[in-house]
Image 1 (cartoon, rainbow, N blue to C red):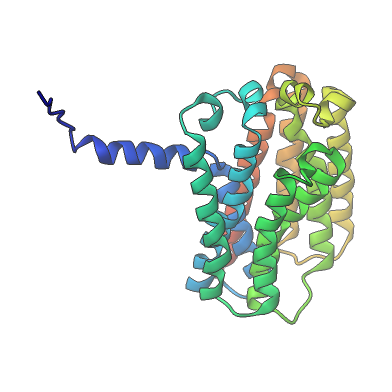
Image 2: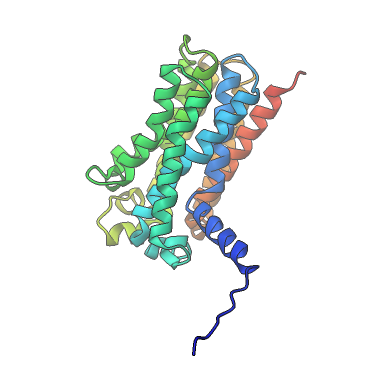
Length: 296
């Protein structure tokens, strides 16, 4: 005798929504905001104001290109995350490997195809396609740059500069970007990015991945970052910059220095300080874009 099983159709959309939510959790919302507003900041630095094309392109770079960089890393680092971040979708089992794999391939395809509908300039397209390539180099064999702390630092710093560079060249493809400004922000990245290792020590050590905090120690790593940031503040005060850019750079550095000072005073806070740094960076980028987008 055949048994009929009733499937509640109302559960299907909920299950699909849950899967989509778990896929999106492979990314970081703070990084999504930083990359989107960094793109708009690049547009502004070119002397233009963000328009529909800039918002659409920024959404592609943030929602697809940078999303792929982080999502493929979450996929490849799932065993490390099981130690460092067991709440993550793959580490916790909330998302299956086949679904995560299909999701990564989908956003990679979108990251390669969607820019073609927004520009045909070879430099802008090349920089747009470079971002997912860096994500592959960082996380996937045979290179897996992620395992070596200095090459991975340089690669991540470049990846986080690309949204602003793409936004700049989208508007001014024949002009060089402001060298002093991008030099300062690159040095800023050298100070901040190693701090992500503060929360990843146990898993990195277990899988023989080089870790800044494990090799230097937590306190020396924070002091190193503070020293670089203070040197950068002196450079910001000395080098020629647009008058509306300097205050935001100083605000950015003051905020990060404050968080790191708090981490030195409260060692337990060091485990979560990197998330606060990213949130602060996103807030300053948003303030810069809003301030420069409206007439005064």
